[in-house]
Length: 246
Image 1 (cartoon, rainbow, N blue to C red):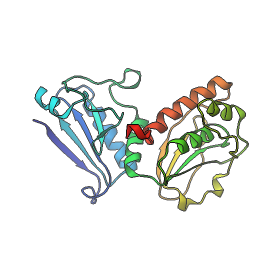
Image 2: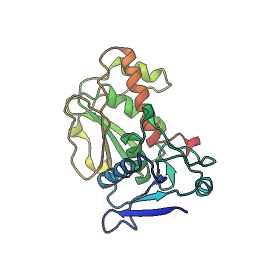
Image 3: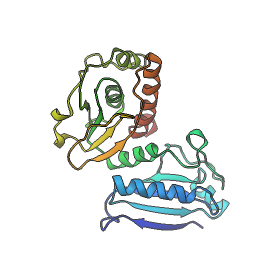
């Protein structure tokens, strides 16, 4: 039988925010790390949410719920990797690079997706490469009604390598222009994703959900632009899954 331990966040926990479930079996060496990760992200992005630890105690229970392995994190009943339920087994689960817990960005994306942002802003310094590619990819994936934009603290011009890297995957950003974060109306944004790595990221005012996906500046040629493009597409696809995966 499964046992659930619930950790509410704030007085509105039972009525506001997504429900985050961490499914584990007894003795899982990564259970506490996964619960801690879920709670930290809930505190930061969705303080009105509930985080629950669900102990899957028997093979029968694992089969009944289609357990994907321990630890598994679900947001409003959807696995953070978007995987469908399996036949169920009391087994360990591994993530990116063989890690025992999912990467932070993946859980963040799942929580932000559940919050249903209507205005998403990508920020870096020059608004010339990473944030421009992110804007183009997100616009191609975001549901109707979601406004996607990008800006920078020291806008320059869109790098031709960024245009070419997205052209290779069928996305045209040739008409994009670099924009200043000062020109963005805070009232149109409810989620901000900063992409700076070694640089100081732009600040954005207001009460918004804030994610930081530090990615390297693709300054080493077209191969580095492709690498950043592919990482952005991976992460943004977790935030805005393609329609067939929803």
